[in-house]
Length: 219
Length: 219
Figure (tube, rainbow over the protein chains, first blue to last red):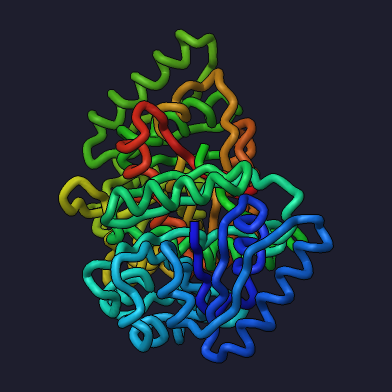
């Protein structure tokens, strides 16, 4: 598939790009500046070359990356996610849009879930998307470091939610292109806060039980 | 240890009573009415007898059960938990109090986390406890059915939180008396909402993926 990653730096973006490239997907890296996006794309291409994996990765401005793709991943910090999507909403028609966005705050040494007024980052992003877009909430709780080790299998669950069943099944399939992730469908977009809230929990556990990088499994 | 289960009917109470009895702990079942508590206690004793397990279980009013125990488990529905604790707060001095309480609401077919104004059931209960009591939040996400199968080992994680380190280590030890549960300490009581919110997520997954009864592991 044609997949864009908007703001495709850092955190889980690298691992997703590497693993989806390996699975044969075409990747569009989006950034506010074309030059920056091209630089990031080149970095991914080089890393994949070193691993002997052919890739099809392009860098361009966020709006063009979104326009070119069937699936749009919002790989943007929570404080800019909704506003960035709002700015490029003309470029989003009937794509599947995926939010892994989680908003946290730090109190003392502890990270707390700190959702926007809408109740979750997913619901905040939903508000600025055109109605024809199909929003799926996913990938909040994948450990970035393990995700980027493209030769290693991942024994985690990816809990997703969303109001469009077909969009969720597309994302389930894309997720299962990254062995051995399992997708669990937790229901409508309204449950996203409950999925997002697991992230600060994991961040706190990672600090306490360092050097473990936790993810989650439902057993 | 001397452990009381207030409102010790239903849900996870049975499994906790059976497993802790098997581990040699003394159990005090509390209820609003002594007679009801005695009946519940008798039921547990009989079940354990059938399994060839000697037990030391007593039934009494909630206040007396709390007074007699070192650890108090609040096994009460969310809508009555804080008010029940408030009514018997004279009987709680320096005990460790454990809240597995989760407040949910149903919207359509979907369960949503619906915490009280304080932000979590744990913080609501904290407000009505004397300052000398030590509150630990735990056991929200154990599957009741599996917990009550006392001959089977449990391969789940119990995420706990609380502001008293010593109380958390007592609860960690009590939890690990139920093989093979593993305790993960997620930090202060302030994170309880993030643990509680996993419960409606699991409830939705249980409905979608029936007959599976999910619990959670951090891997």
